[in-house]
Amino acid sequence: MSIISDKDRTYIAGTYARFPVEISHGKGSVLYDTDGKKYIDMGSGIGVTSFGIADDEWKNAVSAQLSAVQHTSNLYYTEPCTRLAELLCQRTGMKKVFFSNSGAEANECAIKVARKWAEENKGAEYSTIITLKNSFHGRTVTTLAATGQDHFHEHFMPLTPGFVYAEANNIDDVKRLVKENKVAAVMFECIQGEGGVLPMNPEFIKELASLAKSENFLLAVDEVQTGNGRTGELYAYMNYGITPDIVSTAKGLGGGLPLGATLLGEKVENTLKAGDHGSTFGGNPICCAGAVNIIERIDDDLLTSVKEKSKLIFDSLSSAKGIESVSGMGLMIGIKTKKAAKDIIVNCIDKGVLCLSAKDKVRLLPALNIPTEELKEALQIIKNVCAED
Ligand SMILES: *Cc1c(COP(=O)(O)O)cnc(C)c1O
Image (tube, rainbow, N blue to C red):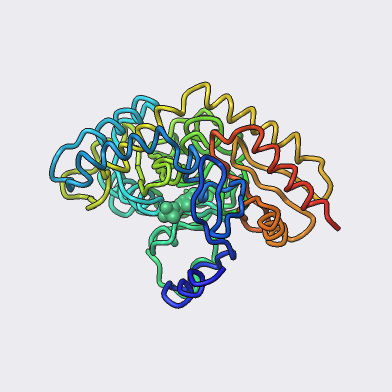
């Protein structure tokens, strides 16, 4: 620990409370710091490196494109983003895709589509978007407004108007807001990630979907964290048997390169016209070439193994000493520990395991292909740390 962290504090805006670890390199689900210490990676860069660090297949796809052409702008056609959009549509039944560079941008697009659709189909006054309390949708001024947590709003008022917040898992509260407002869409996470790895009740999601039909508003699912195989299905909404109108995703889609996507269903496939929206970097050929490789590999076998590893985690941690409860789905796991999550995470770093936090939980988002042996080793270390007095 040295020059890098000192310089970082001097020159980088102080928005991140970094842990005292300087990552130098890695392979798969193993990372090394600049002192050569080894860590098992249970966070995958917040659910981003879907197939781990420096994965060979993904690297080959990315480097081949890097040597062909790295950027063209969206004035021209390129194969990787077209191929990726085709794959995403074929795998989901959605009709069209808009590419951006991050989760917040994917949600910005979802919000713009919802408002334009409502203007054209219900009237311009139908601009309100209902989101859920305790949700997280991003850091831009509009996606902050969508985020149903007051503390994120502090210091940055006024935010974009037109967002109201319903109690999660409370359909009556959604119905009340639909009555009181002119609503374009409801936007929600199937499992609240930053909010503490809290899955929505299947009943609530079903009722929300039928309310969307009867009241004629759009269903927009934020799959930025839950998407791309994370929950054991390609997208988390598939666990709930619903058909959303808009799906936004990012994080794991690019496997480590910045890429966001907003998937548009039948109702909204032609809502955006030339000039309505855009992005200089969106659909970058290198990011998309990597993402094609990622999505092609999230097949039934991989999804089955995600579910098996999920069961292994629940079985291993659920009644362990110092652990109060385990929540989540697939390889998106929240652990409520007796001791403060922050202390558990710091002690795990010391013992060579990198974990995340979410509210008062320890959060695990390992690579989808983490080897079972490494997973078991990490779980044993986490259990030991949780059991310490
Ligand atoms: C991370 C996250 C975002 C924001 O994504 P960025 O790429 O950081 O802009 C939005 N929604 C959810 C559910 C997320 O987990």
